[in-house]
Length: 125
Image (cartoon, rainbow, N blue to C red; front, side, top):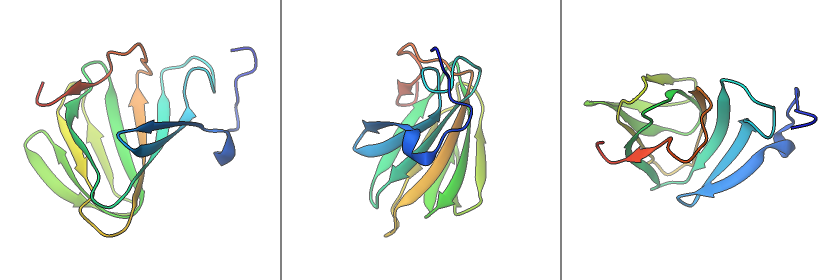
C-alpha cells in the first residue's frame, strides 16, 4: 500500500458483510499497511450469532462497546456488556450470541494479522 492510513476516520473503514453482520475493518493490511494487528468493529443484531469457531493462528481480544452478548470461550460461558473484555488464546474455540433485544457492537483485535483464507475454523475444530 502506497499511503497507509495512520488516522482512520470511522467513515474510512473497509466494510464487509459476514454472516449478515456488518464488519468494519479499522486496522488491516490494505488500509493501515502491513503489521501484526488487525481490528474490526462488528455489529450483531438481536438473534444473531458467531457460532463456535477457532482461529488456529490468531489470538483475539473482544471489547464490548454497546449491547450485550453471551460469550463462550472453551467450555466457559459468560454474559458481557459495555466495557467488558474477553481474551481468546490462539486456537481456542469460542462463540458470540446476541439473544438480547438490542444490537451488540464490539471491537475485535486480532494478532497476528493473517489474512490468507485460513484464519477461521468452524465448529469445535
